[in-house]
Image 1: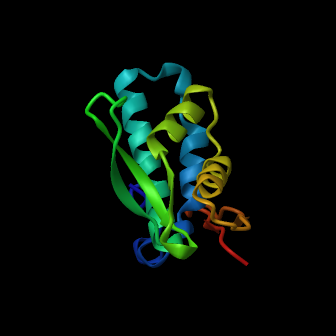
Image 2: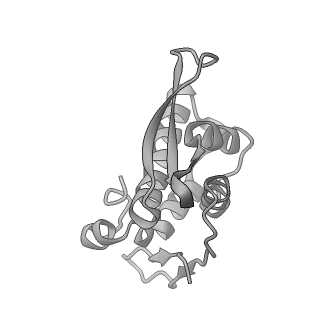
Length: 145
């Protein structure tokens, strides 16, 4: 999806954060008030996939399946990050993104900040965007100092 939005394929493969600005531009341009149910499902899934690409590549997170008797299927897919002493902290990207988009939030930085906070990852987020050149998409990135 990132490449379809205009991100450079090689840059994205090396660091998904390189697609931050094109993803934000995409979210900013969406006619959310015209969305139908299937549009929301697709959007939430796409944003989750992008955020997971960043979390996995930059911070070593991975998908975990945890038993949850309150969930419709008896389990949940969560993103986990290892802590010191072999502990794991989790974030439910599905719930996080659904909640944020349902309340009208479309800024990626708060999504990422909240996910990192829930995972206990002390990252300082910086976004760098270059002015758009006609015919090109700006690039952006954020990361640890």
